[in-house]
Image (tube, rainbow, N blue to C red; front, side):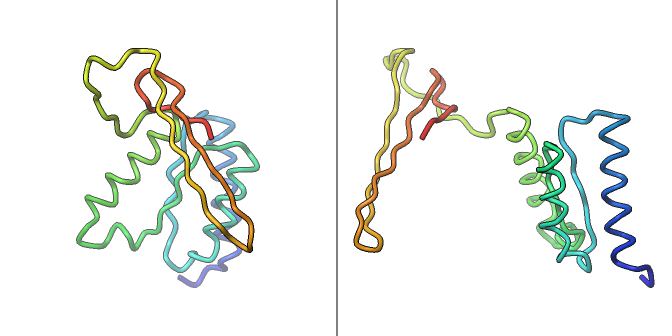
Length: 130
């Protein structure tokens, strides 16, 4: 492609703005050429600044033999970003609806001990706080 890479980037950002103003999508799937891989972070940052849920994928990944798996993972990630629960474990019925799962971990780094914790926040154990 003989076009200026900066022109391509500008056109991608213009396209995102156009879709944002005219279509109001819940989430964007942005496919970029492998030659624009260096622009990946800039595009993601642009979307974050505009508060746009997005998934950016490289064109070459869809040319791999595992493209079906890659597409499935992209759709799972997009669904999670708009609030869907990608996976859920079903627990025995004898666990009460007001149960909470807690997990804690400790580590030692730089001479300091750190503790981290996470807790479930709903009855299906799919929402977390840490």
